[in-house]
Length: 154
Image (cartoon, rainbow, N blue to C red; front, top):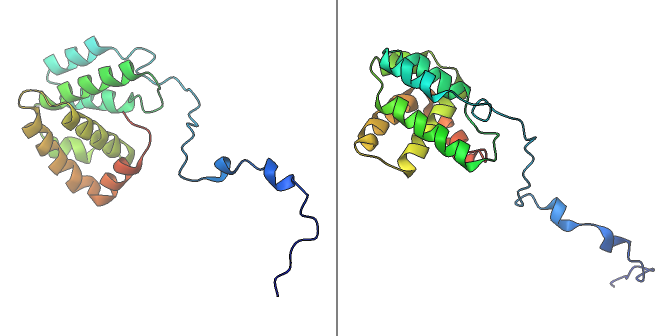
């Protein structure tokens, strides 16, 4: 025996927005915080560091000022180009530089590596593959999984 609700004329259930309950629907909850790049990441400062063979410091500066929270595509492109330029012109011990990074910086570095793969330049792919290998050795599969599933892109 199937019983039916007594009050079928009630329409309260129709006021629920089921789209809010859908976990696959992405709502951008960024707080609009201005990142270091939006404040004006000084590209000339990074270029000066590269010219003085201070590649590790230039990489640290790029990683600390990543525009993950920014919605401005031009800022993200500029930052990505700068990061790839730092990675491709890096002179020094990559392993030592990567070992000095914390987990968040390793994940950000991996984001920039993948972003560099999206828009390859001359000879950048080989260098980025080397960076990927060494970053993977430090961050492991967890780093790759966090980067691939993170909705905040650089």
